[in-house]
Image (cartoon, rainbow, N blue to C red; front, side, top):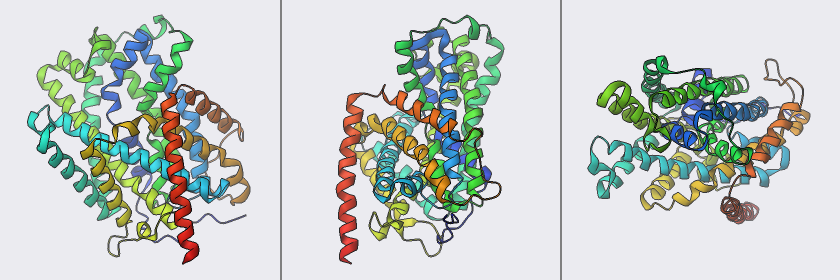
Amino acid sequence: MTNNSGSHESLNREISHLGFAAISLNGVIGAGIFALPAVAAAHSGLFSPWIFILCGVLILPIVVSMGRAASFLNSTGGPIQYASRAFGSFVGFQTGWLSALARVASTAANANLMVIYAGWFWEPISTGVARVVAVSCILAALTVANVVGVRRSLLTLFILTALKLVPLSLLVIVGISQVNPGILVSAGIPEFSSLGEVILVVLYAYVGFEGTLVPAGEGRDSRRDIPRAMIYTIIVITVFYVLIQMVCLAVLPELAGAKTPLADVASVLMGSAGAALLTLGAFVSIAGNLHGTMLSAPRMFYALARDKSLPNWFAQIHPEFKTPANAIVAFGAIGLALAISGTFVWLAAMSTMVRLIIYALSIASIPKLEKTITAEDGQFKLPGGLFIPAIALIICAWLSTHASISSWLTTLAFTAVGTVLYFYARRNIRQD
């Protein structure tokens, strides 16, 4: 068996259990919860709180299984490392390549969305030159914050986490008295044929936790802290989402047709000041999501370069801050180009497809990891052996059947591009 220490990395190990929890929370809670209550209500009416419960139940075996994979390794890369150890460097590269592309496209989209929400307070900022300047400032600030050090970056993340939860918590506290718990038992069940489609849509509010896995090489005890942080996050968020959905149904009869559902609910409960607070909450929530992504996703470029699948430039560590500065700058630059050009929009269609592939590969790697890596005291373990991972793989397969043909084709196209880049990088290594 091999050792899993990952001690060859020179990154500072600054991230604690609380830090990983903040990364996980911000990776999951982004802009989705500010729009999905209306989507869920439009598809399933009073049954919509159950949709959020079902999504939590379905995602939990996946999270638990990926937590088991994370318990074997404490080096940067997350799913890249699991897939590489189990299936070889090529599969590991494709895992990181597709994941990085999906995350940078998401970053570009969310930067634009953040500016749109800011336009609620000052409309000119969301169009024209002002939009370009605002997007540029956002991504530049996030890039610099992550280059100068993980500790400073985590402090910002903690602040954004607190700020994003305040308006959402206030909405629940103020509106909970109007909730009728009876809707959970009296709601009609939608047709099974349409249930999978709405679950796949609402599941957008639960994905993103995998970003917690990537900066494992900067964790104090990542094999123990990462699994617990992800599991606790999903459980807490599921309860939170269900309460929000029930408040929305109780307060806003026309919820299904609302474009800004939480702001509309806040307006009913607390007037225009409440709507402004929720809009500000959306702005801060997206900021936290962006910051969490910038903290974790660029490490994929670093990990791929460290493993000789991308040029070594991406693996360079800043001599003072001990962060993968080049990888962070590259990620920020690509995100800025996509955000300004708008060409990132078509990438969003494949993001769910990519994540399902990454989840499946990570889970499928568990048997090989268990055979080849020495177990350690305190390591996260699963009851029932491989039963939960098997269930998780079935869930991934079932969810993927509800993805569109275009999502599959786009994913295959990026896989082909990645294949060309991988073999080009490998050829250069052999020539050197």
